[in-house]
Length: 160
Image (cartoon, rainbow, N blue to C red; front, side, top):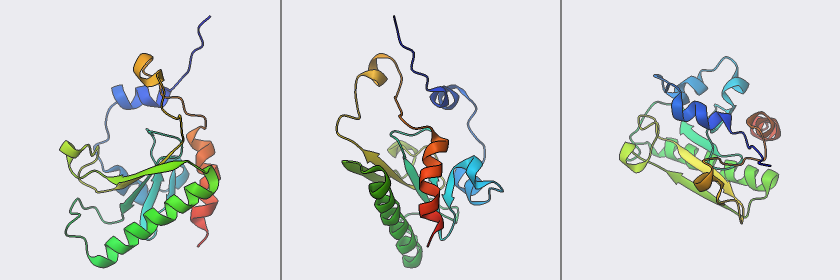
């Protein structure tokens, strides 16, 4: 007997059309933030990654559409890093990961999927959270659905 693990969001990402518009600007301007898994848009955009590397993978981006990391004004840089720190603290409190990957990919060659709008990744990690499934079966096992993660995290980003 073979168990089937479904990860339909990966198939949509891999084979589906890529958005023409910036996902961070769309998230910033969303009429229904929950539909885009937007946790906060002020002072920066914080959202769940719809195609996560791990459970509760967040992205933090400036409200302004820019890829110029070196040219960010100090005030904007401060807002971004403060939001990254806050996101990490919330993830630590709610999910209690063993560690985190926090990083910024600048440019397509560096791995940025959306190179025109810089963004930080905040990825909680647990001991043993990587295994053979992505290699052997092409499947990443996520224990929580994005909607459930959103519901757990949203109250912590709404309160200031």
